[in-house]
Image (cartoon, rainbow, N blue to C red; front, side, top):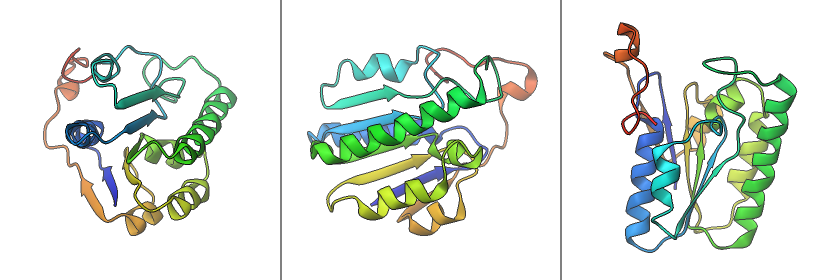
Length: 171
């Protein structure tokens, strides 16, 4: 199965973390590779320390061109390419039943990695590995290849009222 969580509303990563938590309940090994995150300490990285069968790899250099981004485009691209290598290594390990590609949709839409690279990985993955893809602006090709697609729609968000992200709720 391939799940795709996209849209402008909050909850895409949260949904994939819920799937990872559920999979952990059945002793599945899960790998979460975070493309755009990596500079902030997040609750999910801390919580995963309590789940020996959930590995989280903050592979990115932080959000690209927003918030506190001080990193060059080349460094972001290099981090995304290294994340692709990590995906391939984790697939080849044969250890994982679920692989979450957190913010991969954003990495592709910002052209840090080509759509085709991720499509080839998904199409060539061995049977028995499930994937969850998250992030705004999912490419049409990801939507087409996915078995489940959910679009998060923003109706109201505290950020629009000037509130910043809340530790424990948003990160």
